[in-house]
Length: 436
Figure (tube, rainbow, N blue to C red):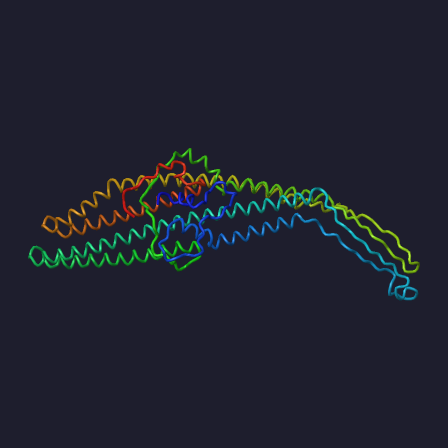
């Protein structure tokens, strides 16, 4: 697997532009029992992740709110009957007057336009929030997938060590029969074999947990797949800090704040517009039962804003706008901090992976093979064999842990800059030379 986020590009999903919100091109309705790939895992998560589905409903709710905000006030029909069903001469309806009237509220001060702009920007914010959550899901898929690959390699390593220990136990038994070593060495070898079998059970349990943690990204607690395809053992040349830092603006967590401030300003404008009073126009006709005469009635209603000029809501909106500006500065500072930490960690793990691969692991493997072979001819004792086996096993585990840390940190860094590192320098991907 050259680069986790490079696979995302290969399936038709890219980080930029964030406002495109295209659906994945791969259509996978459900998980199968076939070996899974990263691009299949990504497609499953994009289509079935419960959190993404919840955000999609929020987007639709904001769209409906924007639609509602653009509607004009409804006219009102008023029917008024006076001087009826009383006493004396007003008994019944002979002396009554019937007035039928229509009234229409006229919004002034740009209220409707301000309200509609605020709702449209809220809808745009929902799009940003959806995109942010989608990137979080994709990052989590990449991290979970790396843990599955690591668990598979850890299980395979332990299985190989168990097989080697079983073969080595036969060698010890032969040397005991030949009278070259004490029978106690067989007991020690059996103990070592039992320890490795316990480690194998542990590795298998961790693999099952890693598979569940991956499949939960598409809402499945019991994964169907048994094998994840891919290779952890590759790294990329890391671009300079400056060249990556300028790409932080691609991060939707930061990019959304431009829309956030616009929306808060739109809310303020909407509240200010409410300080301009609306007028209500009224018109109709009146019928007098005593003379069968008709007459027109009309009028206008204007509220006198002596006390309530919406001043409290306006101040509240101003303070919320100021709060948003402060939150934007805080988010930018924390994002830059996380970026610097991720970059330094990536450099560290890249160096550590390279050091283990080129210096430590070859020596540990050579010593393990050589000492185990030399034991057959009496050049080394059992303690040397067990010690070399332990060193090799721990070094291999450290190497796998470092690879996972590297790939997880790489996913975090790519999440922060909003694009895959390999896309900046596609030829920079290099293999560590270890198998998957």
